[in-house]
Length: 495
Image (cartoon, rainbow, N blue to C red; front, side):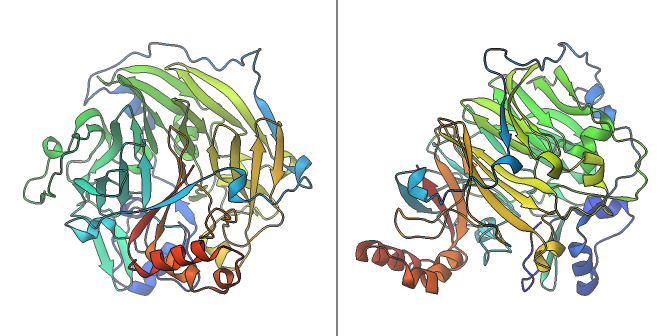
């Protein structure tokens, strides 16, 4: 979670984490706020984390069918990207250097206005997320999943979270034993027109992996699901049933073909269970379990630090992943083959995974990946010096750096200077707000979700007033901002 020092606090940590420390929801706002500002994640209680890998559905045993393959393609070995060795290779990229067009899609307000609610609407980096396959836009927020077409028109409410969300003054928390819905900290994915998402059924003590196919061009009204609770009313097909405890469920879910999918673990879960990723068929049969070779042993602390980025995205139809504290970027070529394609080398500035998890280890002076996106021409990397945490942001103790790796040239270029908050590329296409993608569609369109307030604030800023842009572009920005409410959600699409 990322907080600004003068902002209202949003409790993003699931209350299931708090329950591991035998805490219930804090009704005292100051106490809850202190809990939120704790940058260290509670270490889960001891459990059999291997259990989810030995169950199909509820209790049916499975057999690991294929041995994992991680061999290097001798004809196309992984490309090494040297971060410290290229720090002086700078170039002031602008948006026009990587794209030629930009458009803004305002998401239509759905019948239930809570679905587009974002507690951090006043800042550029929202907690809500978007995913798109260039046919539809899925909005994932605190209150559930909503589908829009590419023009931003409301299509359907896939799911609304109606339990387990509580407000205490200016603080909002979610989770707890009554939570029944889609945990919004776990990004959804789209593959072959199918939506994949995780679902927490806390009352029954289970978690679900769901596959949902949206109806074509059909608007479905939001329907209340508070009267009856149970797996049968969750939209879509149930692919897998697990324990819903945070340390016994996957952090990322991806469809890998019409008949297969993959679940990826964060570093703590992978390092304790020994499983980095598992691939399955739609019946829940295990196709392959990929080993995490960096096991966590003899960890002496009662808490561990949660790193920000477990990378997963599609490129040319292939699932691409990078584990926290690991150098290698892999593509899943077949259900049992991970192909190394890039090595992001931080050199002496790299963080050892045990040090990274250790909440007492000083990470100042260390580099960590903050975000990674890929187009046909570039890898867009953002990394930080020191850990990106609420406390470090508040103290200006973390620096953000942007870099672009040109595939054509085989060179990494750093944008000049570091900043104390994430910054994007100067938008010289239409003079709008700066841009750095948070998601790239399979067709290569770069997307970022912003609120109306962010756009309105930019148009009122000194930066905009002094920008050297055409009168036409200036008027377009002013006109767009004047037609937005602060809480409106806008998808910026760059191509």
